[in-house]
Length: 379
Image (tube, rainbow, N blue to C red; front, side, top):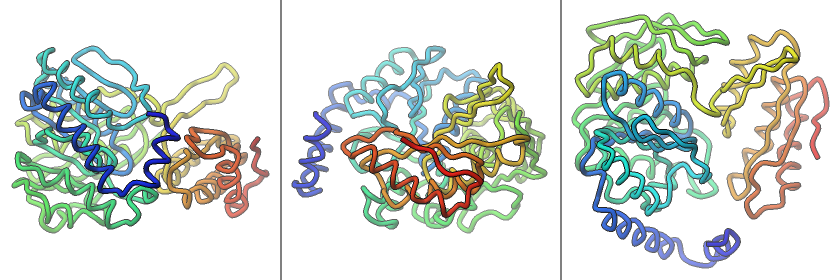
């Protein structure tokens, strides 16, 4: 359906009518493709950021353990050893495409399906009929309030993943403000919390793991993974404390599949990179390019602060914001870029139905707040 027509209808139809349409699409797609996910163990990962990397960590661990894995994420699709990029610009595919992909996983004899779960996908019934057995929450921060209208509504939609009838175990970030609520409301019997350098489990958690003695450099991160009974040193090929959190979430989820700690650690260490997630590109000119999907103020601040400590010369930011999304974060993104970087280039991204020049203006207006060394440059 044309993007402008969709935007027109959303503004004029009641939200309940739109959701009814989405639900009929979800039910029809699941039935048409024969409920393929019911023949696999299904793992869902949700959160504002970190979902994609966590899914890749889980896939790497399970492949290390000998499982044949299928995965759908915002950057790629995986069926066994075959992988292809996700060019749909969607975290969760429309129901018919998602169910078709799950059917292909089942037909390829995948025993586990890993699904990156977005709040839009949950609210619009794109995941209808998929019985999740394990679920992870990376965090909930400022995002998508243009769609959900309030923090409480955004939180409530995310919570749906944790209330499935077949859910066996969940893992939540103990540092997140929503952690206790999710552990309280989940239907799962086994409830994991994970944290950085904090050996105290979150209230209502039945199990807990944490990372101790964390160190990070441009080539990776190192830490000691500790549980109640075991501990082992981990050397990630991905850098940043936020990737240590993603690794902990994956480790907690995979601990429910009767895997040895050594297997989990080996799986974490074998992941070399995630496309578009702090992806390093070396140039012949002697400087490095870093490509990352950071699209919220919190994730952008963590990204820049991680990189800034290792920059020996100048740091240049090239960023934009998507259209038809939360406008309040745009000047904040510009201010953060200016706070950490020497030059800020504000550019066009995916405007959808908005004027791209207006979006760039709104991002650039925040740049002076960050007191950059140089003025912002944008079309």
